[in-house]
Image 1: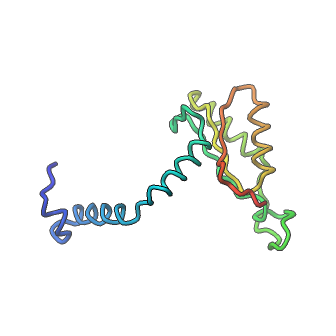
Image 2 (image 1 turned 90 degrees about the vertical axis):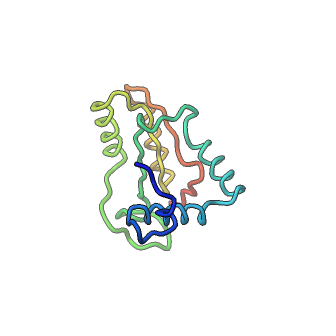
Length: 142
C-alpha cells in the first residue's frame, strides 16, 4: 500500500489518509519538550523492572481511599461504593497467571499507600515468585 504524497496534505482526497495527516500533525504539535520527556523517562525507568516486558505483565490501577465506603480521608465525600479488599484483586492476578504462566510481573498504581503496601505483601507471600513495580510518581494522598 503506497501512499501518495498529496494524500497527506489534502485530507479531502481520502478519509483514511486525512486521519493520518491530522494524527501526525497533532502528535508533532503536542510532543513534549526535551526536558519534559527526560523527566517522564526518568520516572518511568524507576517504576518498571529493568527488563520490563509488557506481554508478561499484569497492571493494577486501583482507586481506593475516598472511593470506598468507610474510608478515613478527611474533607472528602463519604464514599461511592463498597470496594473489594486487596486480597480479591490479588486473586485475579493469580488467576491470570494460572491461565498464562509466562506472566510474572505486576505493576501497581494507586492513590492509597495502604493498598500498594498490602498488594506488595501479597506478592511477596505468593507461592509463585512475582516481580513488581509501582509508579514512583504517585503522590498516594489516600
